[in-house]
Amino acid sequence: MPDIKYEIIKRIGILSTSASGWEKQLNLISWNDREPKYDLRDWSPDGGKMGKGVTLTREELLALRDLLNGIEL
Image (cartoon, rainbow, N blue to C red; front, side, top):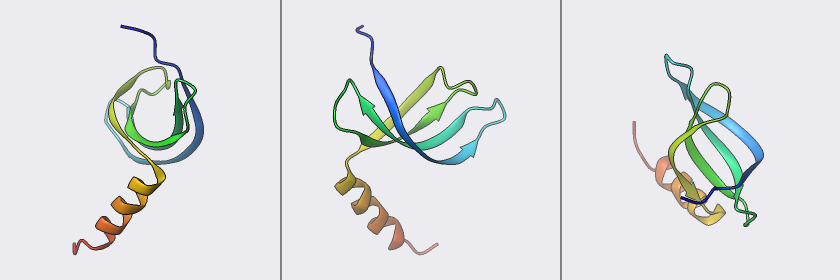
């Protein structure tokens, strides 16, 4: 499997932290020198490992925001 290059452009926030210290973070990340996308995934305490996640364009993030704002909790 080829190496995946990434650069965290902006750390936006932490949604949760597990008992083992892994954090579910929302970041703006450039993957393989491409246009940055919004990224939601788990990161190890030292930031060296990551879990599976989802990446979203700005438009997709805005659509998700609108969907979430419409949910009655």
